[in-house]
Length: 334
Image (cartoon, rainbow, N blue to C red; front, side, top):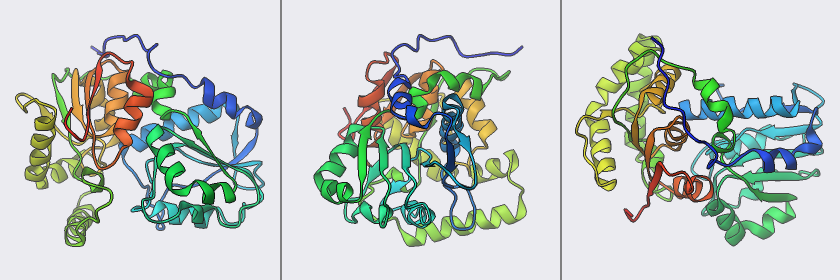
C-alpha cells in the first residue's frame, strides 16, 4: 500500500507572488542558467539543493522562461547557499558571467555572507543591471552594513524574498512523490560539513583532505547508489552519531528511537533515500535547511537548529515563523 504524509494546511507558508511579479518582465524570455557545478563539472551542493533546483525549474516553467545556450535575454543564477566567501562558487560565478556583461542578470533567492572580501568582484565589468534576491533579512543586513556602496556601484539591486522551497511549496509534494515504506517516528539529520561550525573559521585542511581521500577511495571501488551511501554512513557512524547527539542536546531532546542520518549529504543518502526519508518522518530535528523545509511542507513536526551562520534562523524568521509545527533553536540555544 502506498502511504503519504498527512495533509497539512500550507496557507501559513509564503507564496511565489512577490517573486513572479518582480520577474514578470521576463515572462517567455530566453535565459541562460548559470551552472552551479565545480570546475570539473561535478555538481556542488547536496540533495537539498537538488530539491531546490527542481522547484526553481518549475518556477521558470510557470513563467514561460526558455532555457537556452546562446543569445539570452536574461542570465539567471539558480538559488543557493553557495554565495559564501569560504566557498569556491563565487569565483566560478565571476568567471561564468564573463561574456554576459550586457545581459541583465537575475540571482534567485539565496543566502550571502562575505565577512572579509567584497562580493562586488563577482560583478566586475558588468554593464547591464543585476537583480539579487535574498531569502532572509540577515543576508540583506549583512550586505547593507558592509558592502552596500560597492554593490550599488556594480549595478546590483538587492531584493528580499523567500527561499524558493518555502515560496514554491506547492511544487514540493509532486517532486517528492509517495513512498510505501513505514513511517519514521523521529529523524535527526545533523550536518558534519563546513557549515556545522562557524563560517568565519577555516575548516581543518587535514580533516578535509582525509575525508576527501576516504570518499575518493570509496567512489573508485563502489558505484554511487544505496550501497555507496550505506558504506559511507558505516564508515562515518561515530562522527555522525556524535553530531546527532550534540544536535538533540541543543534542541533539548535525546536520541531515543531516532534514525540519525544526514539525508541531505550526498555521501550518506541518494536523492531517492532523501525524498523517501522526508516522506516517512513524523518529526525532525535538523540543522539542514532543506531537510527542515520539505519535512515541514509535508507535515512533520520540525525543530530547526541554527548551524554555522545565520541562514536557518533567517529563513525561519522570514518564511516559517507562522507555521505552527516548526520551531527554531537559535545559536544561543533558545
